[in-house]
Image (cartoon, rainbow, N blue to C red; front, side, top):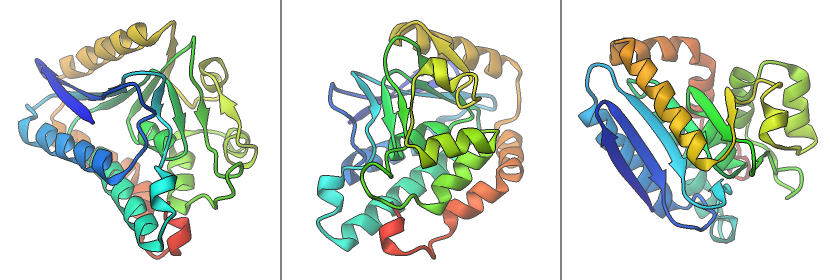
Length: 232
């Protein structure tokens, strides 16, 4: 489901295979296991890159599995919350190298990283809830508010279900940079990771500053008082 590679002080977490990387318990548990390894094996100054094989970065939740029962929907939401919480508290800079489509929960997975790099030639970011008749969770919106600067851009994302290509997302501040292809996007992520590691920041201090900076997001992720149907 995913692999974890270490190159010096840089960890590379890759969602493997040519599928659409639907976020089901198997994949989410695999990601969590990899993030635990990253936390355990981190040096004083490290960095994480998350990327994916194939056409998709992640096409969001495995709704065919989750919507068969309320319990499965609750479980799915809880597992993604846990993964996002792990990313938001990881003691190092994190980079999403988005090499394909990222929709709904997959979009949130990307935005949970400190930096988002995206390929220019293929793929889009898509908050699909309106189009599939789901209510967007409050913590999704909290993450968008922290990562996307303007109300107009957030309205475009949430209230029009816009499919943003890299050329659209970059001027809106949704992503940090755009690159010509999948390989170039990963190489740019590796270059950024190397530069961040070179700064020599203490990872635990970095994580504490992120917790202060994104306090409202972390509180929203940890708030489980929403209705079951909105927890996705």
